Image 1 (cartoon, rainbow, N blue to C red):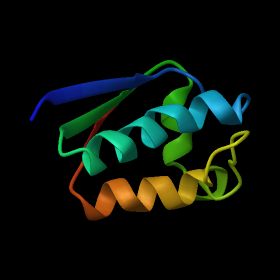
Image 2: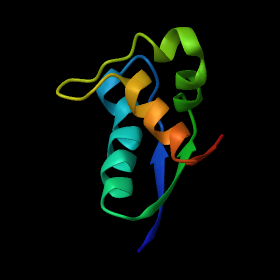
Image 3: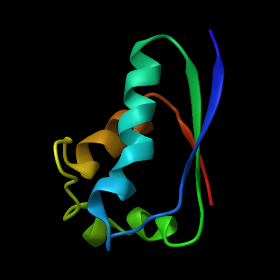
Image 4: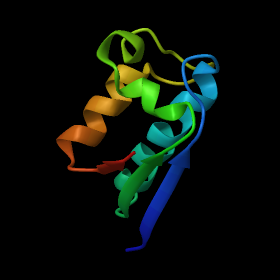
Length: 79
């Protein structure tokens, strides 16, 4: 099992890139890896409930669902 730190730098202005660290985290967790996420630049805005609820990247599940998955599995999110 690997330990991964995924970094996000995009916020609500680019929904696909804002969703990507959480989407990758879900896949890594399902593969049995330990994951943490680091949010910097505009990415911390996705922690605001009203923004997170509205973000849906192209070809990805809604961010609110991916975020909930991460929370339920104890993923540490660093800002």
